[in-house]
Image (tube, rainbow, N blue to C red; front, top):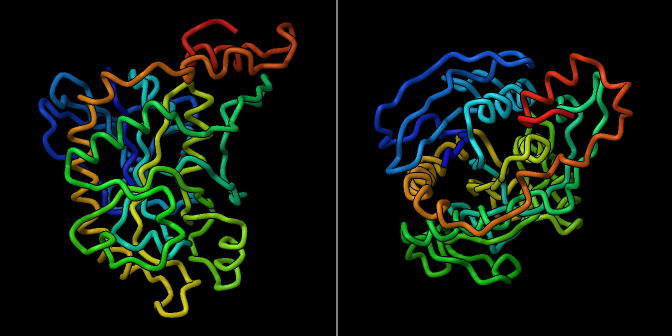
Length: 306
């Protein structure tokens, strides 16, 4: 089993990798954000890419998402965990909490988010954008680190103390709707209130693009969101700033690293899912109309003829 991890703001490396190495790789979509780091965690192999690059060089709109996902798939990954910093749109999801986002609203407009096109048109199912079996394994790994699972209705309860409902530790929310905006600016107050009125729970800038590409690449995908702020809707909280985000991230990233460290053991026993065949019936272009270049790209991506 090979696990891929896409690290976000603050998560630029993974502790505990044995026989770690960093390789420069190329893809049909250009270069990924940086060297592909690989190593062993227990009996599993782990692949790691910091999506913003070494030193945080790429904004959310500048990331080469296709190259990142393609590089992980080409290196043998079967599951990809996306770790990202988010703002909370719910008082019951305070800064310091973790959320396994399972739905997305896509408001991006400047980035490539599909492997199809340019000679082969395809449409994958995306009603359930994350893998329930893989997400469940992440939840088990989180519980093993001492992160407590929040009640299903916790997001709608009055504001809890930061880091947990009684201040005694971090919590994990299983499920949440993540609005993905283009950025790099944070939300206006009007936007933040609008997203709350939609019933959304989180606001971020990266995860939906990775979710779409992982589905097309037939990779199990899970999104571990690290809540750092209340965006700009909360009347009693200061509007989000980069400095405030980094301050909360310092503690959250340490917890995320520990979850990743324990994850391979639980992924190995995850229940079966259908992610590996997600693109099997996606292509609607007539076979004789598929260009040789598209056929070659998709053959390399899916490991079969189209």
